[in-house]
Image (cartoon, rainbow, N blue to C red; front, side, top):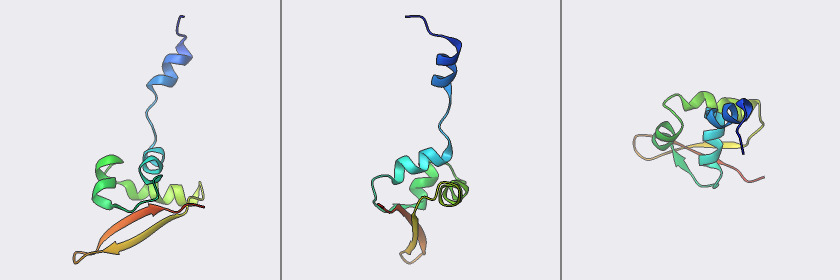
Length: 77
């Protein structure tokens, strides 16, 4: 089977930060900001805002520990 230009173009497309974020948070567990920075990118806050505002994703934020690090999770609706 021969690949077309469109097939190759679709395979080479990178995932958006919002998609990466939702993949990580899809398990419903809490994830620290440090983990999201590694898996999504250091400016993952924009992806959180876009997921909440444009895609109506229920992402909960909380603080944990002495240093008050943020943690995030996707609520199951």
